[in-house]
Length: 411
Image (tube, rainbow, N blue to C red):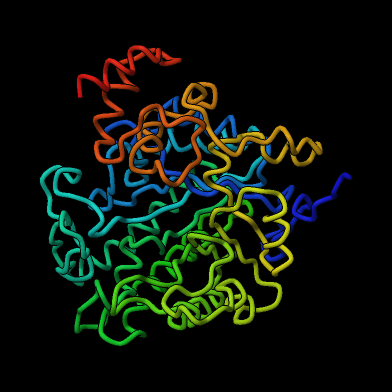
């Protein structure tokens, strides 16, 4: 029996007069494949081009807005005007497949290292490191630096406009700088930028307001502004669901076109309250205006899952890992070819799928438990980096099982 999925219907942002061809979004995926200075590479363009034919909108890997905001090697830069030509190629590559191109922008805050910052100390709301052993102690930003960082977000937005993007998404999630200002764990300031939840909200709201001003001033065509949020934190004290919902209520009063929830599972219940069985998306849908666009990312893979989350009142479904594995997911659903959809990846198909080497390394090591792989290739979770170096980078594909056994014996 053929099913006509509602998520294949188009959607119009009425206040921007922009129509999406369906309700599927490609979630931001960290490729780590840019040049050392943050310039866009052909490998990145190939990856996006292969996935631009199906989703209605593609949100890029997050781009850092200033040099202190760099979070990893190979990240995209939107920190300087000389990056505009590369960003223009990225936007046009996405748009050539019919998808809207959204540049996600961020600053890493304490989620980086001195080495990545070329000798500079990481910065954050306060000088408290992230609570894990290898984390470095950041330097608290001064008031003047905070004001400058807000303007850096605005200038990155201007570059996105000049590069021809269809919008920007402010990354206020995943423990990066904006979330660090909102969190009582990382923000222990006692000035206008910290203390009460209202003061901890000020930085994120100021970034949104400044970016909205830039869009109003420079955008000559419909240009979306989105905001990504993580509803809770695992730390105690940390961000609570009620605080995040209150913040979201403020966000939607500003010229923000959609709210993007970053969840581990799109249907999850609050993890801070184990007895609460009400889903996070239901809390948000009840708190937001009825027709306000809500996007959700979180392990969405199968068409029935996407349809179910639409039935729950979610407007747009963001697929990340599944579009790594299956670039033609939307086309196969639309063509009623569900049996052909990949849900696992073969290491021999990385090149076929246009996956850059740094992402390949990530998928086979640190992200190994987060993505189904058709064979473990002798993967040893106790020595993941050694596995990648010896087995993946030094052997032709497909891997010769006899050579693999030799490697195991040597170890």
